[in-house]
Picture 1 (tube, rainbow, N blue to C red):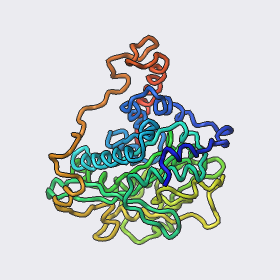
Picture 2 (picture 1 turned 60 degrees about the horizontal axis):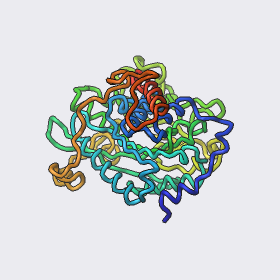
Picture 3 (picture 1 turned 135 degrees about the vertical axis):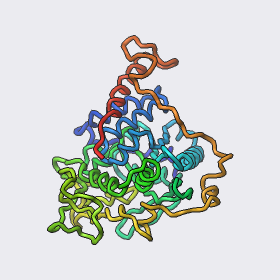
Picture 4 (picture 1 turned 120 degrees about the vertical axis):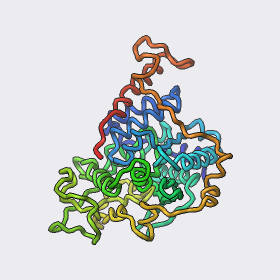
Length: 400
């Protein structure tokens, strides 16, 4: 099996990109992410800012803005040390994310960012798909094929219920993003600097709202966010939106389940009159690395029609995957220790201090600002200017 380094050498440049330059927000984020003089803490700030303003997934926006996203960074320097080094880093980061998920201000999501100019500029073909799969193979353990094609990857995340003292485990599904998506029909799956994988737990977020923030309507909150995410899909001028909400049929939903909203008339216009159980998409939102992103098509495959995709899991339930996704399954301390390790063996404490934004730094941003040691003045200023924009994005208001 080829290593990530070997896959990197096989990547091909994206000729399509010559006529379709990257969007300005991607370029700004990459002034930090792909700058060899940027530190990882600066890269994480750039990622959080970009997600808050420029990604349609409202769950990701909320987690990024609130610093409730565990960000793991892999770059070419780490890749050059070999796949086993990358594997060990990802193993530790994934375990630390789970440890940090257990209580108040727990990390709802895990974001693996693979940064590389070669990957960022690569054509979305078989070579890029092979590289993405090799990265995924280093940290994904529960992979299941879907009968319609592609596969799904699962993980578990944990949260303590303050009322009962019990720990719940939530099923989490892997998703995939890439720079190559920018302005293509799968634009909603773009990410600056290379490729990225996310584990986001809506159930963990909803129960945190309920158990720690005293939100009396966590299901309604979650349903609104899910519908806003689909409604915010990029309206491509040529291909249309890759995912879309469905209209109610004479006020009825496609699936028989109770409405999660207290008042349909009070809903925002963006989701009013829309089905709360089912939506449509030309890619399956539960798939991980989707073959249709790499098949060279300019348009989504419309020969089969869009998938009917599921919102109904948000209501949870007494059994099956719905319960695993939204309510969580109670587990014993021994099970928790087997996955996370005994507390006395944990490597990192969850950070409690707020990371300062650019405007809050002791060193002001100006043409003659004191540069970061060992960093060329021009590169230091480029990073600072880009971070200033990213921090403005981080202050953006989120509808939820």
